[in-house]
Length: 164
Image (cartoon, rainbow, N blue to C red; front, side, top):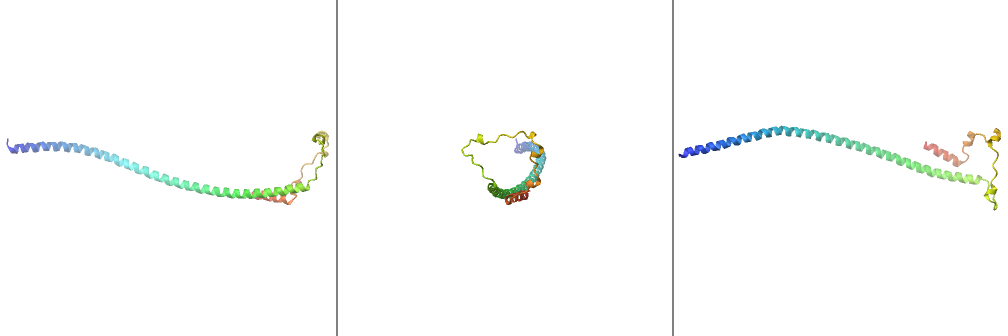
């Protein structure tokens, strides 16, 4: 067999192998092109999801900042109210002490019972209120009864009105 024929056959076999390999490569490239369009679609969806996530993060950050400001403002107001209440409590305590001293100083001395039993010192109950005439019953409180009588009472009323 001539050398040229063997060489032609070898080239033909290599051409057949190359054609088969090219067909196989063409199929893989067409699959890759299909997958490339799906990959582009997935990349676009991922990009959209990323943009939405970033917007949500900005909104949450803004909401958190707003809530922080609201909490700080509420805390500032609460501290101011706490300070006011502590001041009023101190003033009310001082006014109550003055009022108590005033009442003690104006109260008549209690009688000493000199060894009598408590049972012996209790006055007998009076007849039923229905039997008493209307004139003997205590009168309804007048507006003058509610006016402050001492400086301590006036201070206490002023402090209470300033709270309102």
